[in-house]
Length: 123
Image (cartoon, rainbow, N blue to C red; front, side, top):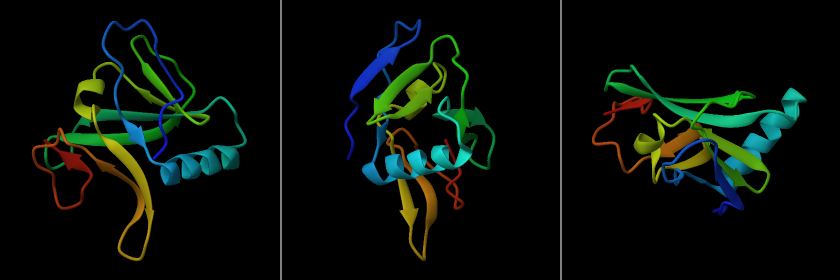
């Protein structure tokens, strides 16, 4: 697993989020950003209300910087978490699976008490 090379918090007094981005996930994020042809994009991970279990994960590329964002660099891949989502994602591991039974980014979150069958939402 990739360890954060640098962690910084933009205007936040909270402890940085301890999301872990695996090497496989970091390589996939790098490849996807290269396909976009932009060097200003970062992977934003957020938790939003919704889904069948109450909360839903969001992963998307973003160029914005918001007050309180926690930014962690994994060997050139920046992962950004907003201050409201950080407590829900602390200790979570983001991986990328490319198998016959699973494909795409996966999140293993120790803060999730329960999740739905689709795996996209939790409570």
